[in-house]
Length: 183
Image (cartoon, rainbow, N blue to C red; front, side):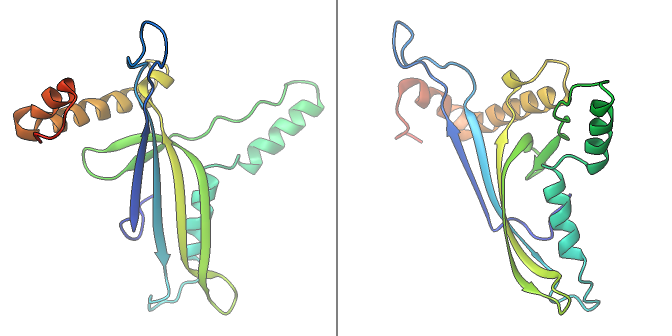
């Protein structure tokens, strides 16, 4: 779902996976766990048509990414009542966070916080600010045949290529030396 405006803020953090004790202390234990926090604005207050459902529909679509579909819940309850299945959590849809042509990341939404800042006379929101928290799915977290595995690995390759552009690959050498002053 494209957003109306570019995010007002994109914050990324990386929790480094490293061993902290024993013979392998300080060695990487896999790719870091990346989390992304964005803040977006939805605004229909200046639209000439004053369609009061635009913002509410986008909010519903975002919340729908983390909510099981009512139809699936009803089917599972019916089958469980008949003793035909054990209720299992439904599979979540694949969510891609696209922020640039070379940055396409499979993510899991971990948090949604929203503030409806203005309303139409029927109390439909016409302006809202939404904060989304996401955890990036790492290739190590996914089965090799999954489309998100390939996307995650492609994102890693793109990041490494971009890092190699810094002074002709000096970033990798500086990191290997343990110093970034020369960058």
